[in-house]
Length: 463
Image (spheres, rainbow, N blue to C red):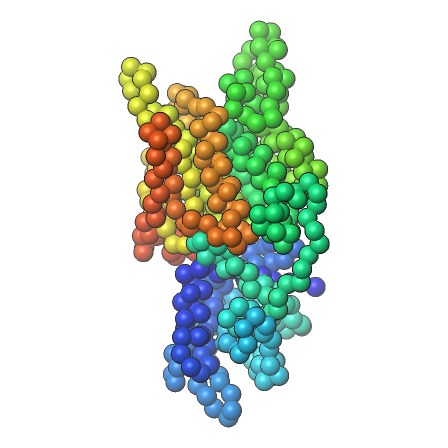
């Protein structure tokens, strides 16, 4: 049977929860949701929370509470015009267990056909909540499909609500027993069911791959179009001299050697298998904007971005917001002055998608670089700040940002609690660590207008 999980950003959930439980009595709301495929489920992505005003949009009559017909029609028609799915929400009593009442079920059966006709969609949904539980159903003209989980993407931790408490799981595999002491067998099981995308498998990305595969993440998606170069060897985890054809450097022209060297995604695959023989891998030797990469990435639970083209930032930022998939962008930089002296050294980890405030809002996607990279494939593939000028890079500096990003992800995903949606910049030569809350532009087309739309809106920068 097809099943669904509903994803909602933490600020939207807080607004909905306050409305449903902020005052005595029963209250209602409607969620307009985008749709996206998942791994073992499909996803409902909350784009808008429409609160029903008591006494006007939500009324008590004949012993039951009902949404007003004009309120329902207005939102169903909006869902129709914007290709969004209509999901009605109301609360029940209890705390960590909840289910639909017989009155709820009769109302759903009576309302399904009119709502399907008004929304011109192939399904509509209902959700019932308790403070620490949620149960839902999607109904079509021929049957029903359960909503098995509500996933709350809070800025500090990921929260999962189900109809009732999840039973205890078996002990973690011996390979991961020591780290399971931190977040328990249940946390290890969560990581085993998780799908992670790593975009860019160079210095930073290879470290990310090494770390997340060692955590016991169940499925990793690798995306990178490049092959191993000799200059990558000091900082590319798991790469050897034959991957870059270094022993043949004197015999082969550079272009030939770069063409036939081992792809970085193949090295990443080898490292991940070494760390976790049971890991499932999707290896894509292509640009992030390739349709194969997009199809795989929108099924992920979390994404790490370690490619630094403006195009990669644009597409990844759009995926994170449009498909409600949190993302951490990492990078490291050594800036030199005109005389070749070190001017500044820093490593960054920037979290996107757990709350409003994205890379576009914060001026981190350079429109000029986007235009330059669009000129040719060679420029798009170039991961340098200055075209044709290699960036100074060292493994230990890349490791600072990668380790910070993976620790923050692990704590957030398993519900231990992270530092939140922050931009963290480490200056190891000072030494100091600076963290800041990203700015949110209320008119942002990504974390505002397109948030939660899923496949109902096109992704920018994709051919």
